[in-house]
Amino acid sequence: MASLVTSTMKPFSSSTKPNESHMIKDGSNLKETVDFNSEKRMRLVKQRRLTVTNVATKPVGSPTEQVRGNDQKHVAWTSVKQERWQGELHVQGQIPLWLSGTYLRNGPGQWHIGDYNFRHLFDGYATIVRLHFENGSLIMGHRQVESEAYRAAKKNNKLCYREFSEAPKPDSFLSYIGDLAKLFSGASLTDNANTGVVKLGDGRVVCLTETIKGSIVIDPNTLDTIGRFEYSDTLGGLIHSAHPIVTDNDFLTLLPDLINPGYLVARMDPGTNERRVIGRVGCRGGPAPGWVHSFPVTEHYVVVPEMPLRYCAQNLLKAEPAPFFKFDWHPESKAYLHVMCKASGKIVASVEVPLFVTFHFINAYEEIDEEGRVTAIIADCCEHNADATILQKLRLKNLRTFSGQDDLPDARVGRFRIPMDGSPYGNLEAALEPDEHGKGMDMCSINPKYLGKKYRYAYACGAKRPCNFPNTLTKLSLVEKKAKNWFDEGSIPSEPFFVARPGATEEDDGVVISMVSDKNGEGYALLLDGSTFEEIARAKFPYGLPYGLHGCWVPKT
Ligand SMILES: CC(=O)/C=C/C=C(C)/C=C/C1=C(C)CCCC1(C)C
Ligand SMILES: CC(/C=C/C=O)=C\C=C\C=O
Ligand SMILES: [Fe+2]
Image 1: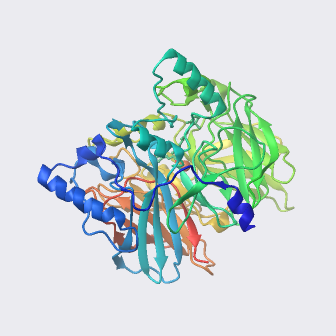
Image 2: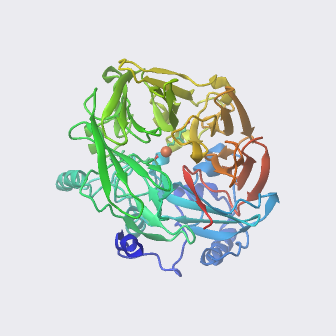
């Protein structure tokens, strides 16, 4: 198996040498945050040079200078200060001794190239952060993912590939035509794997985004970029859901088909790079498939969402960001959920549902009657009240200019009920009163043992208003319809990630890990008790880190 695994990892043509400078060149983002005279600046540069070569477990001498307060410069929306760092953190409180393994979190942590600033949260180059827990101690490290897009940007000091909202500007009409050809072949699409990170059943750790080429294998210990994850099948396609369903035995993915509007559902066995098609479903509405950032599964079914926020061919070709970026809002095309049997690939239900907007499905499960028949499927998601403007709210300009006025659109836990008796319509309702979590809702996790099964608890980011971005951690009890909330004024916490205690029998017996970017420009790892939702430990980072998206747990083997 080892040779199979390594033979399909393609190293990039050149990689960062260990003794190369690991500083990120100051872009205006960084300049904005650093306000001091040139002598101090030189000292800092020297200090950074010392720091950056230290990638073993020693902490850095002293953190880089931070600017306090001002939301314009909130560290959550400021490029990461250095390309890499690693060291042991001082822990306040008690990390449970059973917590043994590594939490990896990916996200778009560098939003500039030279003096050029990106405009959207999702454009930034991937920064992977590692929290390694062992015997109550905590080692933190972070590093840039060495995608082709990132390396080309550094080498040429400009954007070279099409990112979520940005595209390189053609310098002539001829090069525009060339660029279009490169778009259709996929050559100009980014491989900036900045959305999530998953541990496959065979142990490989892969950073992912929505472009298929942006699947990059990393070493979870050193955070080295190993190479591109090459799919060995002939499925083709350029894009997929950024959130495959990954367990120790399974990998399910969803590929939208833009040519013949529909979706392919495919499976990849552990130890292989070959996806095999389970089934296909055609779109029922609209000119193109709906955006599928994520999708839910139950024990026996895959739910394929067809959202009225659909891929848009014209917007794909544009170099400048369109209102809905690569998508368009088509309420007239309606919204649907399709249910595919995992075993046969057959569509067993396809219902129209109320209009919805979601990035993230939380979980789904089957409702069973007394005879053991599946009567309905329940699918929960972080639902933005059918308002796609949330995508615009995630522009960096909005995130960086919080005036104290509430500017976060309302969201809820949207609960779909899909009848399995052939009825044509499904329902969508809030699973609990959205006021319980301040009507902010995204970045969810559950106990992975309950994937596809009836479950009680979900963890997510909620809101304490006024705010312009989710700023609380919330534990949702979907049975009691209650939430417990964690909040630290001015802080932005990232996805609360649940890790179960080995041997646990209660669903919420475990810890919740998050990383917090605070208002003083600092940051810390935070551990909450999964059951009480009280803080049990925190450990300060040497400097604040930018906001990150999704993570995974790599248990100690
Ligand atoms: C960070 C995140 O959640 C989403 C990232 C999405 C990306 C990078 C999407 C990229 C795309 C293109 C570059 C062109 C084709 C469409 C699309 C998949 C949106
Ligand atoms: C962070 C986010 C939405 C927040 C809105 O309330 C969405 C992230 C999507 C990609 O992973
Ligand atoms: Fe996501």
